[in-house]
Length: 148
Image 1 (cartoon, helix red, strand yellow):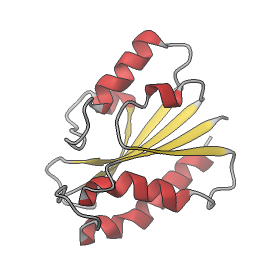
Image 2 (cartoon, rainbow, N blue to C red):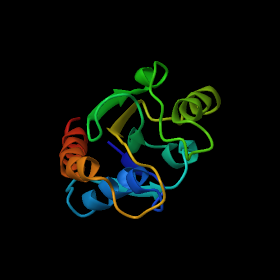
Image 3 (tube, one colour):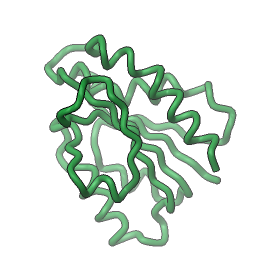
Image 4 (cartoon, rainbow, N blue to C red):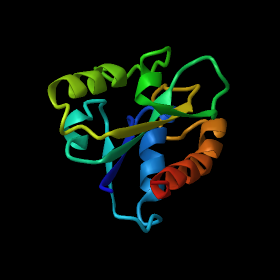
């Protein structure tokens, strides 16, 4: 199964960088044939075309405690999740457009590992709770990769 893991975030916005950090932690730790990519935007469609499965890791701003991790599928995106506001196109819209235009080329399985954030101001360090969530998110993504 051809899989891609994409970490999304802005390295200059504290907790918003969590998706990038998780993806970088995973590189070299997964034995399966997986491609890794980091991105600063949510325009992921062109990056996931041709893959059987995509795992996207990103910051999420809901109302739950910082560091809480959600594992979502595509249908969950259209409910009430709001991904970090530094992105120009939200994830749900991007994926929906992908399925409309590139139906046969889009992955059949897309999972989103979303980490609740609290501080997306300028800075290089994640908040304590988000930093503590990174190893847990890495393990979740590893399990998703290994489950076929």
